[in-house]
Image 1 (cartoon, rainbow, N blue to C red):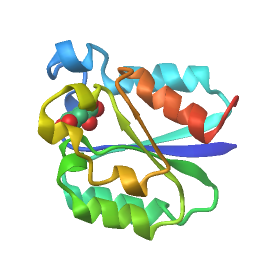
Image 2 (image 1 turned 30 degrees about the horizontal axis):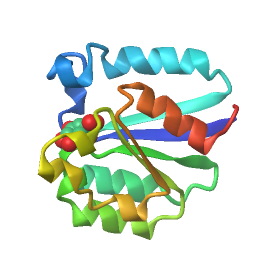
Image 3 (image 1 turned 45 degrees about the vertical axis):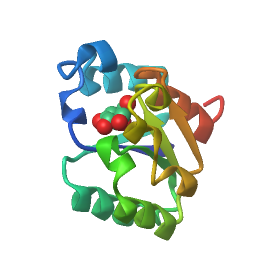
Length: 143
Ligand code: DQA
């Protein structure tokens, strides 16, 4: 069975509660349940951390696994600051798709800059929680 890993960075444990006007009212747990129903032939693994080093460790742990179709990464605010996460993405073998729930390009100037875009396979932003599903379609078309 195909397998993908979703990694969420800081503050994304609060999805559904945090700034719902920007990020919506659905928790990640509920969204993942619905996603798993939509993709019965896909093993969806999920990891969230508020800590930069833990995200890097997870990228290292999973990023050489040939059975993994790819990694969907919403690095949250680390997107705009973390050269270390960019280096980790460059160091691993599996493709990483950068995802954002909000359209970061329509927000503050600091959010319009990403240190990780250039080392990711592609970027999906601005489609709400559906950004994660679109990233699955990019990694596993028509599954
Ligand atoms: C985010 C956008 C980031 O700028 C922000 O820091 C987040 C969430 C998004 O999904 O829209 O935490 O990555």
